[in-house]
Length: 160
Image (cartoon, rainbow, N blue to C red; front, top):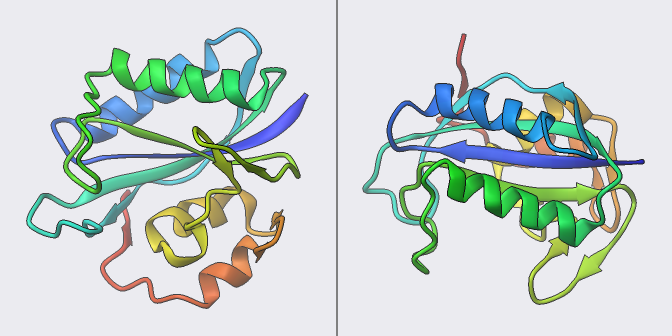
């Protein structure tokens, strides 16, 4: 079994309920067990700023799936919850699931890069990730808590 870290987010519809349901769906997958989950955070949009704020979270899973099989499961879960990937980057979405890390592996392929190459610059990823994995060292990047300390987090607030 490998510990994988997954980022979750969305900004359309009942996002918190959808994130809860997506976490439950992932936990129900054969070969996947959710072992930790962060708080929810309200975060400003990235890229295209003329859209609603996002709600973001992170989970840790123990999995026997390969990285590509886990990625395929994440994409299938997004589709099941109404996500349509139309090629627009940083636009509004019902659900976004990102494989942030897969154990200590470094993968750089067309379909998958882990650790996720832009973790170190994104408070909306690092804040929830630090809730569950602050001491985790991401290969080639450093400790999650140190990465978070190095960037601004203004506009990002935990939700109760």
